[in-house]
Length: 489
Image (cartoon, rainbow, N blue to C red; front, top):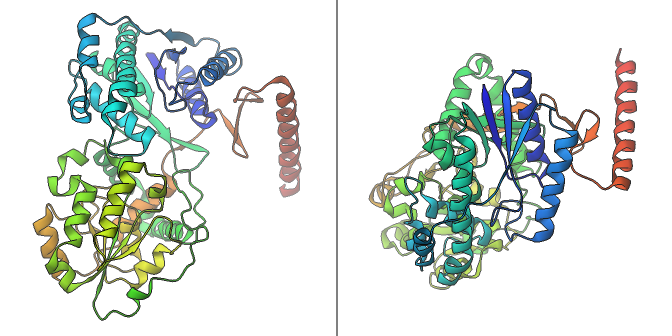
């Protein structure tokens, strides 16, 4: 079998280690492997979004070092060079002036504009991209991606039967996905797993909620401990407990609770009304997921949705509203911060907990009667805490029957005004059990205290004196492991 592997993330040791492990797995299976590498060809990539020359050189050096030291000798390498685009395509790209025009731009059957917009949204952390950025950085990334697509297509036309691609939602990866799709080559996506010693390989598009939901369902159906012994439910409860206590250790988890011990706003303690708490998400994190565009238009504009709720006199007549703005929104761009500030300043009858406020979100859940979320995982965590939870839009845990999922705003209003009851916790347990366990362990790569090794060598490219330190650390780990093994036996 002829297999290609593409992952423009050599600067990130964990992801590069995954690329190497996949190559060794395919080599052991007898495959002919071609590694597709970028040599300063991408206008922007996940590990170097600003296209800094120094980082490009570091990436090239890392790849050269890995070729000589880490990959099987039989692996072939293909450096992708950008193709010259014809004047007509360049003219079409140059004519794009707005975010809407960029999103609508297709190159054949490839939604190249959407991939570029996803790139910009990730980089600038905003769902609102200015015309100036679209016409400068956007045009550069789009032109580079189309050029890369043409080059990748030429390489992949040489009879490949499978390709592994890292990530998938940015233009830097989408261009190779489009080339493989055009040629009918089966695509396997690889990404981070449930721990730093695991990675996940999937035929589902990783940045698709529907794909993730299928993986969760497949996991729970094949996991006999979940079905027969309830051991996975115990594992799931422990997973939620670790997160609530700020002890989450999986790579997806970020501890937003550190130092968050301030008491709740006084308005929540003195009300006679039931409390409806809304937990927002970082809108840019999900903006270009394909599922989002397939939901009701009522839910696609997160800020417009929240503005509509806080101005709904029927809902505010029934409930005291509290909005917990996601802590990650402290990193939002100026435009997004302005949207948030406008809502806060124009709704003084709502209790707002800003991204900077050090209020523990779980204390807010405990004092609330109904939880509303727009994709935040606390929408599912609140189910385990015994609260009725309503999801507006889509999330990883859609379709697991643990949260209410109204189809539009009218249905949401009906649900929330009918004093909803908590739903089953089983779906929440499925999600947490999957989150705590999904992926597979590295087969050939060894993990040592957040560093990655193969054949006794550190994967990350290091200068000579740094490698001496790595050798010493590896020796200490070897001695410690051997002594511990001898003591146990």
